[in-house]
Image (cartoon, rainbow, N blue to C red; front, side):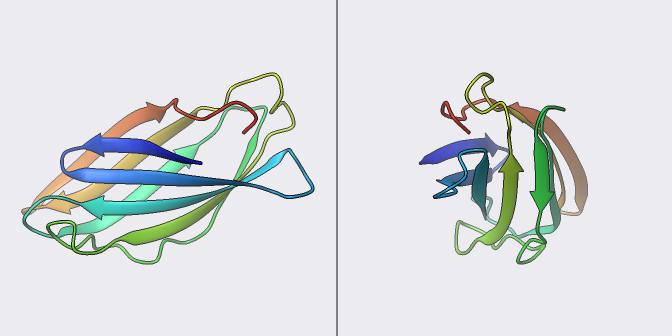
Length: 118
């Protein structure tokens, strides 16, 4: 299951969602960050938070520079534990900070496109 989590300012974020084979509460999120701008994005940090009824484990990203023109990606793994996966749809508040063309950028939003059961 893949969702487009972010598409703004030339930054594309894709989430591949992988359910744990024996524990329905657990979902691994394999995040991929790409940059469609003609110049690199530097100091890229993606922060995420889930609702109080769930827990989020965040692993370090594979890098902080997104190559220009969609020429490479940075990856990051999140793990969501959601004991209410059957009752409540998952949402994730996100904050992106990065430097583009010498300008520091901070952007925030909510990812709502999670399928049922996450």
